Image (cartoon, rainbow, N blue to C red; front, side, top):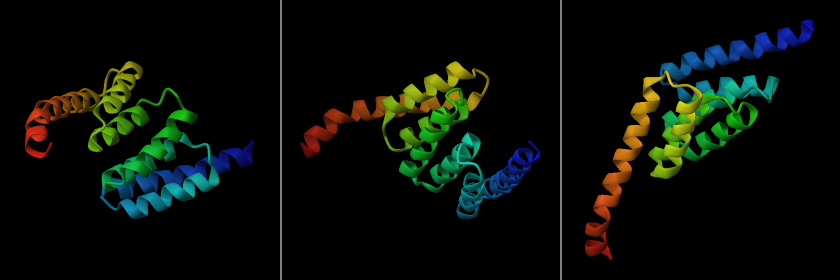
Length: 141
């Protein structure tokens, strides 16, 4: 039991340092620390979510989505992972998938305002894309 607590504390240290790097915009160092945390505990959903967020902020949306998928698989009530995956889908232009994930994140936790803002932005971008479609078809179709 003592060894298990020791491992948890160790991967927690990598997690905390990774979060500090991510918040400072040093995504590569953050990802490296999250990798180290996951080497110690491959079922650490929080580290998958944090690494995914680092990839998302770096613009590597597919890698981010893969990590968010794993975070959700390990912790199906992880509203952060659903919300962040929704952001990544929106940034990729996959608005319906974004809205689905953001709806689920809000269902799991109604308090974070960023989830509502992100969902509203996904709807706005979806409507803008739909509204522009006839013009684009005339121009390029």
